[in-house]
Amino acid sequence: MRNYENLVIVKPTLTAEEIQANISAIEEIITSNGGEIAARDAMGMRKLAYPLGKNERGYFHVIYYSVDPSAISEIERRFRINEELLRFVTIKYDTNREVTAWNQLVQKAQKKATQPAGEAKVEEVVIPAALEEDEEE
Image (cartoon, rainbow, N blue to C red; front, side, top):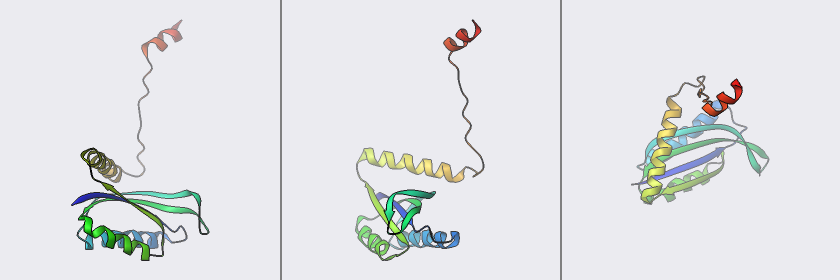
């Protein structure tokens, strides 16, 4: 089994329930073809670089998964049939370096999913000692 990433862009005209149903259907397509979903990353509604049809925005969702390479053609065929998807891209992670990057992306997505939505990441600002001395003078 190889590691893959799919970025799908769903139509913005759908309701939240319809978007979630489409994402669930996409995940079902992957699992029904023998795939194992490692992580998901809902990137939310974003402005597109250029209009796709009459749509200037889209709901972006990334799915990281492992599946047998022979199943990719069927997964992509089913994606093409789905009229609610504006675009999708499948990225294959093949070499050791790419697999390491895929693992890091999966960990990052899992960490993002477990972090509460309202909790913002607070970073401590460190002032170098040289600047502190200048301020005292």
